[in-house]
Image 1 (cartoon, rainbow, N blue to C red):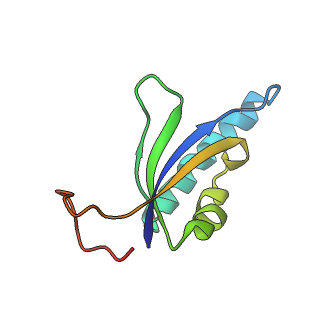
Image 2: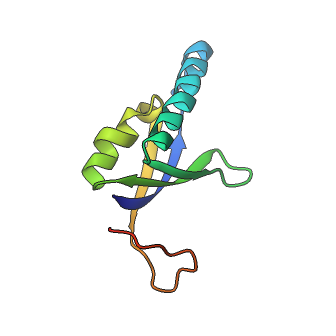
Image 3: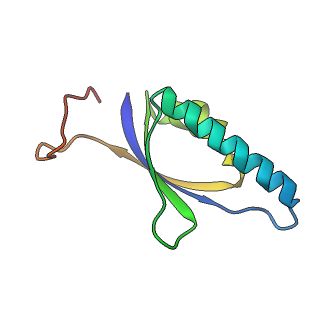
Length: 100
């Protein structure tokens, strides 16, 4: 699998019922856990004081990342994303053998 740095920003549409927001956020937590178990979601951070997330994700390619991973997130229809494909750096102190 290849690795991707993904920045996600969620914007809830104006007028959305708060109960729907709560339902989707709860479902998002469940789906994130499933994706982590499957090896697709490796790490997830929230920059201090900001309402966006930055994550390390894995997928076979960018098509799978969008179609079978990110696209399955319950909040995806409300998200914008910036995706950067990653490759191992020869001087990475945490480098492991990774087929990318």
